[in-house]
Length: 390
Image (cartoon, rainbow, N blue to C red; front, top):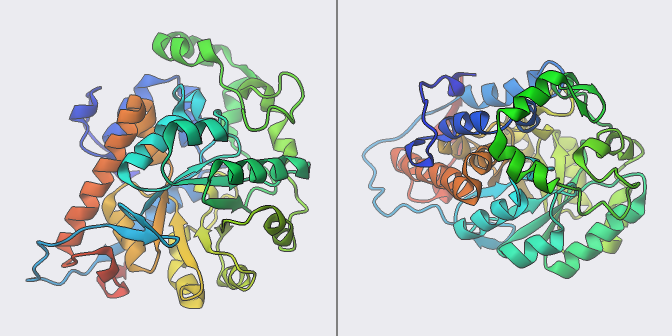
Protein backbone atom coordinates (compact mmCIF):
# COMPACT_ATOMS: atom_id res chain seq x y z
CA UNK A 1 0.00 0.00 0.00
CA UNK A 2 1.78 3.19 -1.17
CA UNK A 3 0.49 5.33 1.68
CA UNK A 4 2.23 2.98 4.14
CA UNK A 5 5.70 3.34 2.58
CA UNK A 6 7.28 5.77 4.99
CA UNK A 7 10.64 6.13 6.75
CA UNK A 8 8.97 7.24 10.00
CA UNK A 9 10.59 5.68 13.05
CA UNK A 10 9.40 7.92 15.86
CA UNK A 11 7.11 7.07 18.76
CA UNK A 12 5.93 10.57 19.61
CA UNK A 13 2.57 12.00 18.51
CA UNK A 14 4.28 15.35 18.07
CA UNK A 15 6.58 13.90 15.41
CA UNK A 16 3.79 12.22 13.45
CA UNK A 17 3.00 14.16 10.28
CA UNK A 18 0.21 12.07 8.80
CA UNK A 19 -2.05 9.09 9.36
CA UNK A 20 0.63 6.68 8.10
CA UNK A 21 2.94 7.91 10.87
CA UNK A 22 0.22 7.32 13.46
CA UNK A 23 -0.24 3.84 12.04
CA UNK A 24 3.43 3.08 12.58
CA UNK A 25 3.30 4.25 16.21
CA UNK A 26 0.14 2.17 16.72
CA UNK A 27 1.69 -0.94 15.15
CA UNK A 28 4.53 -0.89 17.68
CA UNK A 29 2.36 -0.18 20.69
CA UNK A 30 0.14 -3.28 20.77
CA UNK A 31 0.56 -7.02 20.09
CA UNK A 32 0.49 -8.03 16.45
CA UNK A 33 -2.70 -10.07 16.65
CA UNK A 34 -4.51 -7.10 18.20
CA UNK A 35 -3.22 -4.73 15.54
CA UNK A 36 -4.42 -7.19 12.89
CA UNK A 37 -7.89 -6.97 14.44
CA UNK A 38 -7.90 -3.22 13.80
CA UNK A 39 -6.34 -3.37 10.37
CA UNK A 40 -7.19 -6.66 8.67
CA UNK A 41 -9.74 -7.43 5.99
CA UNK A 42 -11.62 -10.46 4.73
CA UNK A 43 -10.04 -13.42 2.93
CA UNK A 44 -7.43 -12.18 0.40
CA UNK A 45 -8.07 -8.55 1.40
CA UNK A 46 -8.88 -7.54 -2.18
CA UNK A 47 -11.68 -5.28 -0.95
CA UNK A 48 -9.39 -3.77 1.67
CA UNK A 49 -6.74 -2.85 -0.90
CA UNK A 50 -9.38 -1.87 -3.41
CA UNK A 51 -10.70 0.87 -1.14
CA UNK A 52 -7.29 2.55 -1.17
CA UNK A 53 -6.76 1.94 -4.88
CA UNK A 54 -10.15 3.38 -5.82
CA UNK A 55 -9.25 6.66 -4.14
CA UNK A 56 -5.78 6.66 -5.71
CA UNK A 57 -7.35 6.39 -9.18
CA UNK A 58 -9.13 9.69 -8.66
CA UNK A 59 -7.02 12.73 -9.57
CA UNK A 60 -7.70 16.43 -9.24
CA UNK A 61 -8.08 18.93 -12.08
CA UNK A 62 -7.63 22.22 -10.19
CA UNK A 63 -8.41 25.68 -11.53
CA UNK A 64 -5.96 28.46 -10.71
CA UNK A 65 -5.75 32.14 -9.74
CA UNK A 66 -8.68 32.02 -7.32
CA UNK A 67 -8.73 33.89 -3.99
CA UNK A 68 -9.22 31.25 -1.27
CA UNK A 69 -8.20 33.35 1.73
CA UNK A 70 -11.71 33.03 3.22
CA UNK A 71 -11.88 29.22 3.08
CA UNK A 72 -13.45 27.14 5.85
CA UNK A 73 -14.69 23.56 6.06
CA UNK A 74 -17.72 23.90 8.30
CA UNK A 75 -20.70 22.11 6.83
CA UNK A 76 -24.03 20.46 7.61
CA UNK A 77 -24.41 16.72 8.21
CA UNK A 78 -27.95 15.33 8.47
CA UNK A 79 -29.27 18.85 8.87
CA UNK A 80 -27.06 19.90 11.77
CA UNK A 81 -23.83 21.93 11.75
CA UNK A 82 -20.48 20.11 11.78
CA UNK A 83 -16.96 21.44 12.08
CA UNK A 84 -15.77 19.29 9.19
CA UNK A 85 -17.31 16.85 6.67
CA UNK A 86 -16.16 13.89 8.78
CA UNK A 87 -17.95 11.30 10.89
CA UNK A 88 -16.19 8.75 13.08
CA UNK A 89 -17.42 5.38 11.85
CA UNK A 90 -18.61 2.59 14.13
CA UNK A 91 -15.87 0.19 15.22
CA UNK A 92 -16.31 -2.61 17.72
CA UNK A 93 -14.14 -3.86 20.57
CA UNK A 94 -12.22 -0.60 20.90
CA UNK A 95 -11.44 -1.40 24.52
CA UNK A 96 -9.07 -4.09 23.23
CA UNK A 97 -7.03 -1.38 21.52
CA UNK A 98 -7.01 1.15 24.33
CA UNK A 99 -8.82 1.33 27.65
CA UNK A 100 -11.96 3.50 27.38
CA UNK A 101 -11.42 3.63 23.62
CA UNK A 102 -15.07 4.37 22.84
CA UNK A 103 -15.12 7.38 25.15
CA UNK A 104 -11.82 8.69 23.77
CA UNK A 105 -13.16 8.56 20.20
CA UNK A 106 -16.40 10.30 21.14
CA UNK A 107 -14.67 13.02 23.15
CA UNK A 108 -12.24 13.84 20.37
CA UNK A 109 -15.12 13.96 17.88
CA UNK A 110 -17.10 16.28 20.14
CA UNK A 111 -14.10 18.59 20.45
CA UNK A 112 -13.75 18.66 16.65
CA UNK A 113 -17.48 19.30 16.22
CA UNK A 114 -18.21 16.14 14.23
CA UNK A 115 -20.49 13.14 14.88
CA UNK A 116 -19.17 9.92 16.39
CA UNK A 117 -20.88 6.57 15.79
CA UNK A 118 -20.87 4.01 18.60
CA UNK A 119 -20.95 0.33 17.69
CA UNK A 120 -23.45 -2.18 19.01
CA UNK A 121 -20.38 -4.22 20.01
CA UNK A 122 -18.71 -1.36 21.88
CA UNK A 123 -16.91 -2.06 25.14
CA UNK A 124 -18.50 0.89 26.93
CA UNK A 125 -22.22 1.11 27.55
CA UNK A 126 -23.91 3.61 25.27
CA UNK A 127 -25.29 5.56 28.24
CA UNK A 128 -21.80 5.98 29.67
CA UNK A 129 -20.43 7.26 26.37
CA UNK A 130 -23.25 9.81 26.21
CA UNK A 131 -22.62 10.90 29.80
CA UNK A 132 -18.83 11.15 29.57
CA UNK A 133 -18.37 12.42 26.03
CA UNK A 134 -21.40 14.40 24.89
CA UNK A 135 -21.33 15.87 21.41
CA UNK A 136 -23.19 14.50 18.39
CA UNK A 137 -23.63 10.76 18.88
CA UNK A 138 -24.95 8.22 16.39
CA UNK A 139 -25.73 4.61 17.32
CA UNK A 140 -24.82 1.75 15.00
CA UNK A 141 -27.22 -1.18 15.02
CA UNK A 142 -26.75 -4.85 14.23
CA UNK A 143 -30.12 -6.57 14.02
CA UNK A 144 -29.31 -10.08 15.24
CA UNK A 145 -31.46 -13.20 15.44
CA UNK A 146 -32.74 -12.30 18.90
CA UNK A 147 -34.67 -9.14 18.04
CA UNK A 148 -34.92 -8.15 21.70
CA UNK A 149 -31.25 -7.13 21.47
CA UNK A 150 -31.89 -4.58 18.71
CA UNK A 151 -35.05 -3.32 20.42
CA UNK A 152 -33.10 -2.78 23.64
CA UNK A 153 -30.32 -0.90 21.83
CA UNK A 154 -32.78 1.39 20.03
CA UNK A 155 -34.78 2.20 23.13
CA UNK A 156 -31.71 2.92 25.23
CA UNK A 157 -30.02 5.00 22.51
CA UNK A 158 -33.14 7.10 22.08
CA UNK A 159 -33.39 7.69 25.81
CA UNK A 160 -29.69 8.63 25.98
CA UNK A 161 -30.04 11.29 23.29
CA UNK A 162 -28.36 9.65 20.31
CA UNK A 163 -29.48 11.60 17.25
CA UNK A 164 -29.19 8.96 14.52
CA UNK A 165 -29.39 5.20 14.13
CA UNK A 166 -26.96 3.60 11.67
CA UNK A 167 -28.41 0.25 10.60
CA UNK A 168 -25.63 -1.97 9.24
CA UNK A 169 -27.02 -4.18 6.47
CA UNK A 170 -23.92 -5.90 5.09
CA UNK A 171 -23.25 -8.20 8.05
CA UNK A 172 -26.15 -10.61 7.73
CA UNK A 173 -23.48 -13.32 7.29
CA UNK A 174 -20.25 -12.93 9.25
CA UNK A 175 -17.16 -12.40 7.05
CA UNK A 176 -14.18 -14.74 6.93
CA UNK A 177 -11.22 -12.96 8.50
CA UNK A 178 -8.42 -15.46 8.04
CA UNK A 179 -5.79 -13.29 9.72
CA UNK A 180 -7.89 -13.56 12.87
CA UNK A 181 -8.08 -17.34 12.68
CA UNK A 182 -4.29 -17.62 12.28
CA UNK A 183 -3.73 -15.75 15.54
CA UNK A 184 -5.51 -18.44 17.58
CA UNK A 185 -4.85 -22.14 18.02
CA UNK A 186 -8.58 -22.56 18.75
CA UNK A 187 -11.43 -20.06 19.23
CA UNK A 188 -10.56 -17.70 22.06
CA UNK A 189 -7.11 -19.19 22.64
CA UNK A 190 -4.17 -17.25 21.15
CA UNK A 191 -1.26 -19.14 19.65
CA UNK A 192 2.00 -19.43 21.57
CA UNK A 193 3.54 -16.89 19.22
CA UNK A 194 0.73 -14.44 19.93
CA UNK A 195 1.12 -14.90 23.68
CA UNK A 196 4.89 -14.34 23.52
CA UNK A 197 4.27 -11.22 21.46
CA UNK A 198 1.86 -10.02 24.14
CA UNK A 199 4.64 -10.24 26.74
CA UNK A 200 6.62 -7.74 24.67
CA UNK A 201 3.90 -5.15 25.29
CA UNK A 202 3.64 -4.83 29.10
CA UNK A 203 2.02 -1.38 28.96
CA UNK A 204 -0.83 -2.79 26.85
CA UNK A 205 -1.16 -5.75 29.23
CA UNK A 206 -1.44 -3.49 32.26
CA UNK A 207 -3.87 -1.12 30.61
CA UNK A 208 -6.11 -3.55 28.71
CA UNK A 209 -5.74 -7.11 30.01
CA UNK A 210 -5.88 -5.94 33.62
CA UNK A 211 -9.32 -4.50 32.80
CA UNK A 212 -10.59 -7.07 30.34
CA UNK A 213 -12.99 -5.34 27.93
CA UNK A 214 -16.52 -6.68 27.60
CA UNK A 215 -19.33 -6.16 25.11
CA UNK A 216 -21.21 -3.92 27.50
CA UNK A 217 -24.26 -3.34 25.32
CA UNK A 218 -24.76 -7.07 24.78
CA UNK A 219 -23.71 -8.68 28.04
CA UNK A 220 -27.28 -8.95 29.36
CA UNK A 221 -28.16 -11.10 26.33
CA UNK A 222 -25.06 -13.32 26.08
CA UNK A 223 -24.32 -16.54 27.96
CA UNK A 224 -22.00 -16.30 30.99
CA UNK A 225 -18.41 -15.71 29.86
CA UNK A 226 -19.39 -14.85 26.29
CA UNK A 227 -19.25 -11.06 26.74
CA UNK A 228 -15.43 -10.98 26.68
CA UNK A 229 -13.44 -10.89 23.42
CA UNK A 230 -12.23 -14.45 23.93
CA UNK A 231 -15.61 -15.87 24.90
CA UNK A 232 -17.49 -14.02 22.20
CA UNK A 233 -15.26 -15.24 19.36
CA UNK A 234 -17.47 -18.30 18.97
CA UNK A 235 -20.77 -16.64 19.91
CA UNK A 236 -20.87 -13.33 18.02
CA UNK A 237 -20.62 -14.78 14.47
CA UNK A 238 -23.65 -16.98 15.20
CA UNK A 239 -25.77 -14.00 16.20
CA UNK A 240 -25.94 -12.49 12.72
CA UNK A 241 -29.25 -12.95 10.97
CA UNK A 242 -29.34 -14.12 7.34
CA UNK A 243 -33.09 -13.47 7.16
CA UNK A 244 -32.76 -9.67 7.16
CA UNK A 245 -34.65 -7.92 4.37
CA UNK A 246 -36.05 -4.52 3.45
CA UNK A 247 -39.33 -5.23 5.25
CA UNK A 248 -37.40 -5.09 8.54
CA UNK A 249 -37.05 -1.32 8.17
CA UNK A 250 -40.71 -0.97 9.16
CA UNK A 251 -39.97 -2.83 12.39
CA UNK A 252 -36.97 -0.57 13.08
CA UNK A 253 -39.13 2.51 12.52
CA UNK A 254 -41.55 1.26 15.17
CA UNK A 255 -38.78 1.56 17.76
CA UNK A 256 -36.68 4.45 16.43
CA UNK A 257 -37.96 7.98 15.82
CA UNK A 258 -34.68 9.77 15.12
CA UNK A 259 -32.65 10.00 11.94
CA UNK A 260 -32.22 6.64 10.17
CA UNK A 261 -29.07 5.82 8.21
CA UNK A 262 -28.62 2.63 6.18
CA UNK A 263 -24.99 1.49 6.03
CA UNK A 264 -23.87 -1.08 3.46
CA UNK A 265 -25.59 0.17 0.32
CA UNK A 266 -23.57 -0.23 -2.91
CA UNK A 267 -26.11 -0.03 -5.75
CA UNK A 268 -28.27 2.76 -7.12
CA UNK A 269 -31.26 0.42 -6.96
CA UNK A 270 -30.83 -0.15 -3.23
CA UNK A 271 -30.22 3.55 -2.68
CA UNK A 272 -33.47 4.33 -4.49
CA UNK A 273 -35.32 1.82 -2.32
CA UNK A 274 -33.85 3.36 0.85
CA UNK A 275 -35.03 6.78 -0.29
CA UNK A 276 -38.52 5.47 -1.06
CA UNK A 277 -38.74 3.96 2.42
CA UNK A 278 -37.96 7.29 4.04
CA UNK A 279 -34.39 6.78 5.16
CA UNK A 280 -32.53 9.98 5.97
CA UNK A 281 -29.14 8.86 4.66
CA UNK A 282 -27.17 5.95 3.28
CA UNK A 283 -23.52 5.00 3.70
CA UNK A 284 -21.85 3.53 0.63
CA UNK A 285 -19.68 0.93 2.31
CA UNK A 286 -18.12 -2.51 1.93
CA UNK A 287 -17.56 -2.71 5.69
CA UNK A 288 -13.95 -1.61 5.44
CA UNK A 289 -13.12 -4.67 3.35
CA UNK A 290 -14.00 -6.97 6.27
CA UNK A 291 -17.09 -8.70 4.85
CA UNK A 292 -17.40 -9.64 1.16
CA UNK A 293 -14.01 -9.79 -0.54
CA UNK A 294 -13.51 -8.59 -4.13
CA UNK A 295 -16.23 -6.01 -3.52
CA UNK A 296 -16.39 -2.58 -5.13
CA UNK A 297 -15.41 0.40 -3.03
CA UNK A 298 -18.07 2.88 -1.96
CA UNK A 299 -16.37 5.68 -3.89
CA UNK A 300 -16.54 3.55 -7.07
CA UNK A 301 -20.33 3.77 -7.12
CA UNK A 302 -20.66 7.22 -5.55
CA UNK A 303 -21.37 9.21 -8.76
CA UNK A 304 -24.17 6.93 -9.97
CA UNK A 305 -25.78 6.76 -6.54
CA UNK A 306 -25.67 10.53 -6.11
CA UNK A 307 -27.25 10.91 -9.56
CA UNK A 308 -30.04 8.54 -8.54
CA UNK A 309 -30.89 9.76 -5.03
CA UNK A 310 -28.69 12.72 -4.10
CA UNK A 311 -31.66 15.09 -4.05
CA UNK A 312 -33.72 12.77 -1.83
CA UNK A 313 -31.39 11.76 0.99
CA UNK A 314 -27.84 12.31 2.24
CA UNK A 315 -25.21 10.12 0.61
CA UNK A 316 -22.24 9.29 2.86
CA UNK A 317 -19.30 7.05 2.07
CA UNK A 318 -16.50 5.20 3.83
CA UNK A 319 -13.57 2.93 3.00
CA UNK A 320 -9.86 3.70 2.75
CA UNK A 321 -9.82 7.40 3.64
CA UNK A 322 -6.35 8.28 4.94
CA UNK A 323 -5.85 11.83 3.67
CA UNK A 324 -7.87 15.01 3.65
CA UNK A 325 -7.50 14.99 -0.12
CA UNK A 326 -9.26 11.60 -0.15
CA UNK A 327 -12.17 13.24 1.65
CA UNK A 328 -12.25 16.10 -0.85
CA UNK A 329 -12.49 13.63 -3.74
CA UNK A 330 -15.60 12.05 -2.25
CA UNK A 331 -17.19 15.42 -1.52
CA UNK A 332 -16.49 16.60 -5.06
CA UNK A 333 -18.34 13.53 -6.35
CA UNK A 334 -21.39 14.37 -4.26
CA UNK A 335 -20.95 12.83 -0.80
CA UNK A 336 -22.27 14.93 2.07
CA UNK A 337 -19.65 13.54 4.47
CA UNK A 338 -17.10 10.76 4.87
CA UNK A 339 -17.02 8.14 7.62
CA UNK A 340 -13.51 7.36 8.89
CA UNK A 341 -12.58 4.30 10.92
CA UNK A 342 -8.97 3.12 10.81
CA UNK A 343 -7.48 6.62 10.74
CA UNK A 344 -8.86 7.59 14.19
CA UNK A 345 -8.19 4.07 15.47
CA UNK A 346 -4.50 4.46 14.66
CA UNK A 347 -4.59 7.67 16.66
CA UNK A 348 -6.43 5.94 19.51
CA UNK A 349 -3.85 3.17 19.75
CA UNK A 350 -0.96 5.61 19.41
CA UNK A 351 -2.09 8.11 22.00
CA UNK A 352 -5.58 7.66 23.38
CA UNK A 353 -7.89 10.65 23.15
CA UNK A 354 -4.96 12.93 22.26
CA UNK A 355 -4.05 10.55 19.44
CA UNK A 356 -7.58 10.63 18.03
CA UNK A 357 -7.55 14.41 18.22
CA UNK A 358 -4.21 14.39 16.42
CA UNK A 359 -5.61 12.19 13.64
CA UNK A 360 -8.65 14.45 13.19
CA UNK A 361 -6.47 17.58 13.20
CA UNK A 362 -4.26 16.06 10.50
CA UNK A 363 -7.22 15.32 8.26
CA UNK A 364 -8.84 18.69 8.86
CA UNK A 365 -5.58 20.50 8.11
CA UNK A 366 -5.24 18.55 4.87
CA UNK A 367 -8.86 19.35 3.96
CA UNK A 368 -8.21 23.05 4.54
CA UNK A 369 -5.05 23.03 2.48
CA UNK A 370 -6.68 20.99 -0.29
CA UNK A 371 -9.62 23.37 -0.51
CA UNK A 372 -7.24 26.24 -1.07
CA UNK A 373 -5.28 24.37 -3.71
CA UNK A 374 -8.52 23.48 -5.51
CA UNK A 375 -9.69 27.08 -5.62
CA UNK A 376 -12.55 26.52 -3.15
CA UNK A 377 -13.53 28.56 -0.12
CA UNK A 378 -15.95 25.93 1.23
CA UNK A 379 -16.83 22.29 0.75
CA UNK A 380 -20.04 23.44 -0.97
CA UNK A 381 -17.93 24.69 -3.88
CA UNK A 382 -16.50 21.23 -4.61
CA UNK A 383 -17.90 19.66 -7.75
CA UNK A 384 -17.29 16.70 -10.11
CA UNK A 385 -15.36 18.84 -12.61
CA UNK A 386 -12.50 18.95 -10.09
CA UNK A 387 -11.96 15.17 -10.21
CA UNK A 388 -10.95 12.81 -12.98
CA UNK A 389 -10.65 9.02 -12.84
CA UNK A 390 -7.39 7.72 -14.35
